Structure formats: C-alpha cells, structure tokens
Image (tube, rainbow, N blue to C red):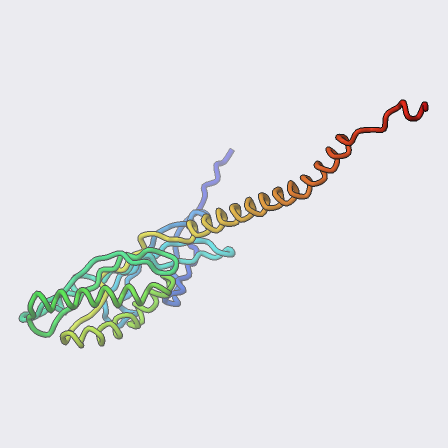
Length: 232
C-alpha cells in the first residue's frame, strides 16, 4: 500500500491590532493554537523600531494573533541617548482590567540632572502609568502604546518636573491573564449563593414543620375518655 504523505499548508493569521495578516505553515489549522509570532513593526511605525510578540488562538474557524509583548529595540534607544543627558529606567508590575503587565519605561532628560530629580521622575512615571492602565484591557493598552496615546500625555506631565527629550515604554509584557481566574471565582460565588439559598429553604421548611409536630404530639398526649363511663 502506498503511504500518503501529509503536505504542509499556509494558513492566514489575522493581527487585528495592526490590521494586517500574515501566514503560518502547518499540517492542520488546529496546530496553530497557542503559537508565538515575532513581528517587526519598524515600517508600520515609520522608523520607530519595535518588535512585537503575538500569540495565536482559533476563534470561529479563524486564526487570530493577540499581542503579548512589545520591545523597543536597543539600537533605537542608543540613538536617543546623547552625551550630556541622563536616562531614567524602571521596571514594575501593574494590573489592568484583565491581566497583570510588566512595564519597563525609559526617559531621557535634555541635560544632566541630580539623583533627586531622577527619583521624582521615576516615581511620577510609575504613578501615572499604573493609573492609566487600571481600567483598560491589555489589548487596549498595547493599541495605545503603538498609537503613542500612552507616551504623549505621560511626557507632558513629566515635563513639569524636568524637560525630556525622549519618553517611551521599552518593554510591555503580559505576565498573567485574569480571565480564567475570574471565571472560576464567579463559579465559586454562584455555588456559594446556591448553597445559601438551599440552606434558607431547608430552614424555612423546618420552621413550618415544627408547629405541626407539636400539634400532633398534643393530640396524642390528651387523655381519652374512660371506658367505664360508656358502660355506666
């Protein structure tokens, strides 16, 4: 019997965050579940060198890639840092609506500044970023990063402390998603509510049955008429 060899096919992968499609090779579409892609966004962002890591998932028969990490490439950052300036970096975790993110911002001042100014910039930068992402889903945070909607207002607020020549997010990464955990918590809450409702029903039925039991007992306890009186 002739052995038929499986042929690999190219499948379209949608990337809604940048409105682009790419192709991945696999034997079957189901094999593309939870695969990672690296995509260079330098041309799309007009020279700003960002590399994005995306994770694939299958929805309604389509393969969709969702952003998981962006990295501002080191050679681009080196171009921004010049002699006679200081750079300020930080790394912290912050929670958005449906995930925990790792954020690594970077600032470059116009001139050399004291340590106190750098600490003030670092503190204010963290406060603003934590406040900015807390009510947003992580897909929206990545979208705002690519459209410069996160960095521009941050830069304007930090310039009140000291003028900056560069303000950006060096790394933005999804550390942990909350969707599955939240669903489990919701299920647990529903189960606990159902149990409390059942307990309340049981208590109500027991309360209703208690007086009936007393009446029956009272009837049994009442003495019957003596048999001798009937004979008399």
